[in-house]
Amino acid sequence: MRLIISPAKKMKTDTDTLECSGLPEYLGRAEALKDYINGLTFEEQKKLWSCNDKIAAENRERFADMDLYHDLNPALLAYDGIQYTYMAPSVFEKGYFDYVQEHLRILSGFY
Image 1 (tube, rainbow, N blue to C red):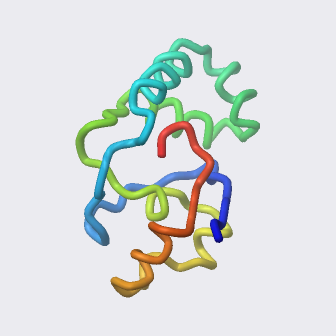
Image 2: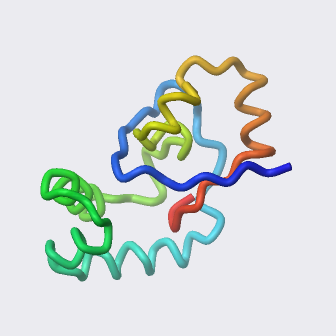
């Protein structure tokens, strides 16, 4: 069985809890998507993300500085939203991460 969830609009950096075990599966496509989003105006990005000005500004900056090869953190720890808060991955034990690695999928162009 696979659990499929969506990404959250807000993200955080957590490179201490768990080491990232790999690069995005479709890295070339992720690079193209990043370039496309960086080419949009602020208003176009905000409309794409359907979010407020504050979150759009944070994400615009995040995309401008994004490096898909260094200082990576797992998607489960990177997203900051209701479903991620209730899942509480920051208090997972080792076996829990193994389970979600096998059974959880996050629909995102970058993971």
